[in-house]
Length: 267
Image 1 (cartoon, rainbow, N blue to C red):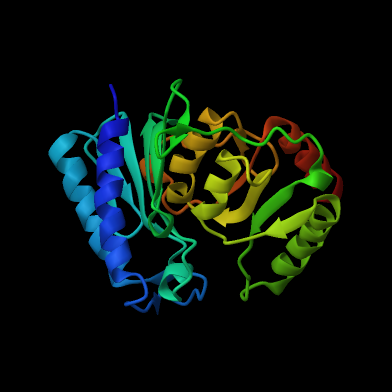
Image 2 (cartoon, rainbow, N blue to C red; image 1 turned 45 degrees about the vertical axis):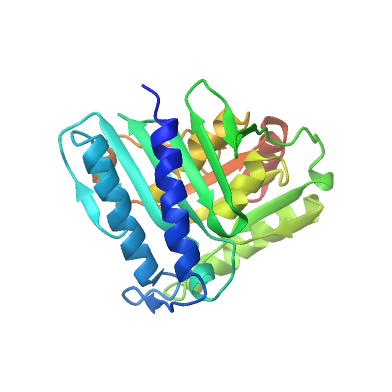
């Protein structure tokens, strides 16, 4: 089945909603976690995406960051992040995105990411390559980490500062081995990996909706997408994984190996 046209159309329409609201809404903190922000745009875009999925694929399951779980007992699960990088969006920073991924059982088979401010839509389907605005994209061919830009998303752990202190020590080693560090801490960084601008993107604090879409896009662009320590991503029983913390290490094959050497040595 061809999912690309459906995902593209939905992302085009939701990009219009995002662009209309960008710079005109403010965010509220979810719960007691200052890292988690919600805006009215998240809710509006999430509702629209769910409506479109239910029209076109009424038998499929849905996981939406804000709306939660819709369980239809299907082997197929749409995984939606209405706005990834909501803190950026709410503060008028344009590095945010809209993500739609599709899992069959535990495997990503299709996905799309819109960067509304940049008028870009990246799309991929298993075995068909990855494209940005209909142009084929590939990960970096650079073989030296020292010549590469590496993105690293990091959240502060006020509840346990020791976690943050230890993570920044490892981050320091990565910075010392690459050309420069970049961080929007959003899917903008994922797309920069898929397009070859960045050599890799790492994060130790994410959720299933942060991973389904970029996973398939980066893999179809020729990259490697694993957990932070190089093990396969585990989306088994995805409807039961909505509270699970995911880590990831996404990079070109050569740079993924080099990043793993650093992680294994200093973790």
